[in-house]
Image (tube, rainbow, N blue to C red):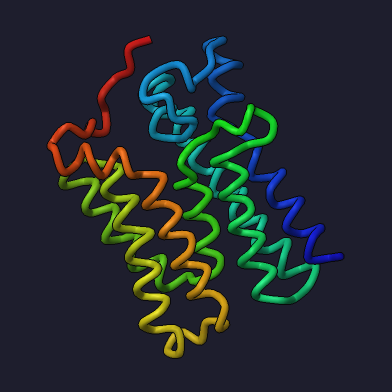
Length: 202
């Protein structure tokens, strides 16, 4: 029962869309109808600017952190912690409060992975940030982060003393993120992807 409660609460936490809430509050519009149409920090940057985008990024990260810690606190089971983190990401991507139309879960994924596999996420995060600075493609950095974290968590699970379930969840989360970014991947390959800093047409 505690497992179900943790996963369910994590999904509902993940379903809170801060980009939607802030955009409605500040600009009185649905962010999903502007910019890229994605309910996330990057599109918030395009639609509202730096301040709100940073707020959304941090708040969405907190959702992932809270979900993993909730699972650990309630059950003490790494499997439940991982499942709760995944539930928060799914909630962000398919939020019950907003017609199951959300974002791509990058910031929430960051929160989940940093909490679960800190060192693997830290190393991948540094590489991802450098790639964004150099290329200005946020989507590429996001893909590098999730894929790199999954690879490192599997390759160095024993070295970092990660619970046995964590690498399984990092791979699952990476595959979900790759699927959610499938259109971005196509645009990157075709040289059509938008770079960070491009303003939205509203």
